[in-house]
Length: 457
Image (tube, rainbow, N blue to C red):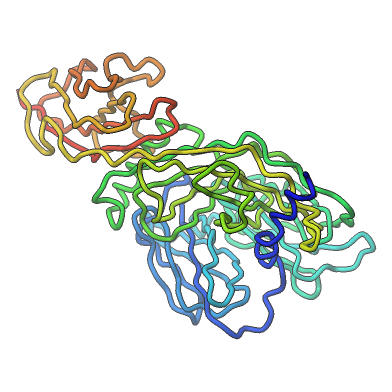
């Protein structure tokens, strides 16, 4: 049964494995999709993204971008933005394939005066230098990557100084080597690696795969301000504080999406693993159907994948599985790939209605206003969040003060209103509020539009 399962995976993993092969002669055009975030993990809206000599674009409301018509081969993708009074930048090395979209080109920006670099060599057990080995420096939300040249040399620039990075070197046919490297701003830190030969090894199966679906409010899925993008991320982090601690992030779609399904799994060190294959289907065990493969993460440090496919629809159940692809995967036999993970499923909720009472932008004269919204099909309960100012990552809600003890701010469906009973409202102050609907098991959430009112007694 194990051999048969691997055979069923062979066709798709052959395609996935091509992502670790050599770039070859440039003869066609492809696309690059990815995400730009700052050092806090917040999406950067309006960042300039480019491949030198091949055109440029800017990021949209969720920090994602799409570059088209890029010559195949390895390409440096650079992003830059003015944040405050500082210039921020970042860079990602990606491999482009003809007539295909290379996804997961995720770029982390930090101030240019705080950046440092790592450089070194990747060797085999006999001291020979390995060409086209990949070196990953794991940071918040993404991993920076470099590919060794014919001398086995690599260099990763644009890393934020003052941090210890897990750095992994990997190459097909070899076991990974991992080190912790301290990056110093304005300096280059040396780190070289020696890879052992992989023979007959299989990476561990990813464990505890979970899926969480977020439905965003209509009207802010295509283009919006950086403040609105940060507000949505802040709300998601209040509900799920783990979002700020994921070590690697990959997104499957470059454009704004109504639905986001986040996959997470337990990260374990494994020198046999080159990356992960992601499968999605409309029935359980999607990895049994090769055509269900939606992405390959050529990043042994990854532990999160965010599916933002525009084809995702509310009230449809999606099943996911993840496999680990090994260092010596054999497409003829299927050996070298792990068994599929457990099934994880998500059924996105519909978007919340735009109706609110008090009406958006209105004035109230009572210090205990009744907050009302439309009921949502599929919701089990609602969480109301009220902020003393526009929500952002560094602003906690005024009400409730403790989400673990929400009191009347949490409302069971079909009830769709509650009376504010938090701290005293201040005359002339504008307050922002939002409602998050939850499915019965909490794995699907739908965020309402952001509403506001001004208190004038």
